[in-house]
Structure formats: C-alpha cells, structure tokens
Image (cartoon, rainbow, N blue to C red; front, side, top):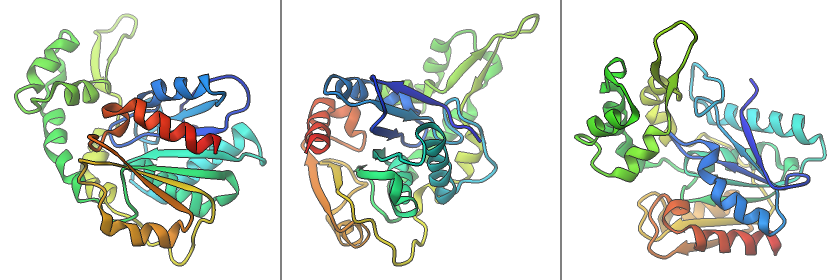
Length: 265
C-alpha cells in the first residue's frame, strides 16, 4: 500500500506515532520535535484512509497493524525495534501491532483508549454528518467551510481539526476544487468498526507499556484495567490531570514529560 510518513529528528528512528480518527501524523509533530530535543527520532504515520495515505474499501484494525509493520520492516529493516505511541484509533492499531508483531515493538504507549468497544466514538456521528453536508462546490476559501460548519460544530478547535482534511486541488487548465483528503464515506459508514476491538485470543505482549488517560475523558475507565493487564501485563497507568480525550492537544507539556521519562527509563 505504501503509507505516508514524516520523519522528525536525526538518526535512526526509535519512536513511531499513530494518530486517531480523522487525524494525521502531523498532529503529533510538536511532541515529536520535543522528543527530538531529547535525542529521539520519530516516524509519524498517516494511517490508511487518512491524510496522504491510500484509501481502502474496508476498516480493519488487524490489517492496519499489518500495514504499519510492513512499512517499518521496509524502512528500518528486520532489526526494527521502536517505541510505538498510539492515540485513540491509533492506540488500537498500536496495541495490535505489539500483539501481532512483538519483534518490532520495543515498548508501547497507549493514549486514552482501551482494548474494548469505545462508546465515545458515537460522538463522531454528527461530525461526519456535518462534513458530508458541506457543499464543497460552493466554497471559495477555507473560511467559508469554517463558517458553514459552525452551525453544526460550534467548537472552533474541533472545526479546525476536521478542516485540516479539506484540501484545495489545483489542476492546470481546470477549475480548482475542494475535496476531503480522508476517506469520509468509508469512515462514516464504519464507525461501529472504529469503535470495536477484535478478538485477539490468548496472546499477550510482555514488553513495557505506558497507558495514558485524560482525567476528563469518557474513553478510558478504571473498569478497562483488567483487560489491559491481561493483554499487556507490564503496564504502568498514568492520568493527565485536566485533560480530555485529546491529551496531546489539551496537555502537551505534561504528556511530553511522561513520554520522555518512559523512553529514557
């Protein structure tokens, strides 16, 4: 398939970032740059159906983990051993990567998601509807899209997060056109699959795991701890005070401090 990646830092990569639903690798660029100052080199992935990576015809967590594994082997060779950091949807991909390809994963960080059905994904239903309802042919500039979306998505930060996926196509001799860079039709139709968690059987990952939750997030609860420990027995759990589901946006300094301590430890 060939997933789009961005490299931040110098030298051989030792950290991989996997973003959440409707996101892209560059959402983690600020934290990756902070880790680079501490000597870590990061690969930021655009997962399938997101950003500049190819689209697929079905949503499949296991297949996404296999695709990331293939990219790591291609780019870093058979001796690849990285810390994989995944948020939300990307956290589920990261967990499956560790379970299915443990030889590639030196350590794991799961940010605000659990190996379970994620009921909070339902909150994305109105966002999908708003994006689908946006008449792209009527847009002159990005600010038009922001103004129209405001009626259904009042949070300006959420709108800007969604609108990062709206791109202007400039083809020579043709009319400029706006388009969604993410596979909106597939992701909107597969939200139940996004919320789900596959049956992984009796496998477990023995390496070190940092499990980070936002204090105010509905996605991660204490009742999830038993499942996490069964699959990842060497888990350390931390909560970021005041943060919601978007921990890296709400509390970047606090999260960076936790990541740095985990990587250097």
